[in-house]
Image (cartoon, rainbow, N blue to C red; front, side, top):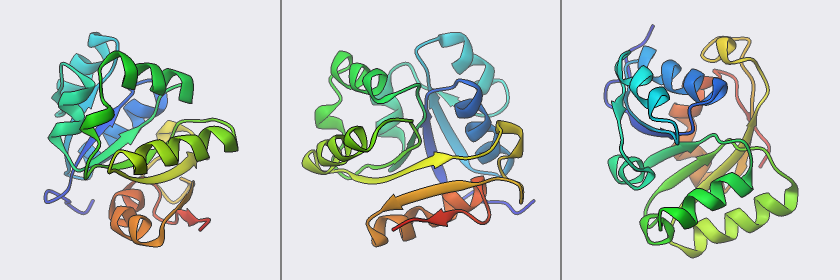
Length: 165
């Protein structure tokens, strides 16, 4: 597998898919920081090479690129509010892989941009064990320059990810 040691990324949310995303980045040679509401999941990822973060603010601070993969936008909004993350987004590129409605996506995009961040929003269309293989599928949308910037990371997850514009 190609080494991507010059890439670093944080992953917030370590359910089945978030853990698969973090493992895929670790296996590709990235420096990966992780946070989850359940510390046991953070410790499990640290045991395979990730850097565990004590707070989501630590994960946002650790890397410019942050993948968010939580159950839904309400959960993510709760994390943002509970941990006071509104002022932590300036210059951060959020790769949002949380499911929700188109209204959720639009509201979240406005929130990220309004707080100085950048956003690529998408959906994972495969099983966690398929990430990083030719069977992986990501559907992504966002500003062209943000998608181009995130392209190398997205390509590690799904070599033929789809740009929906």
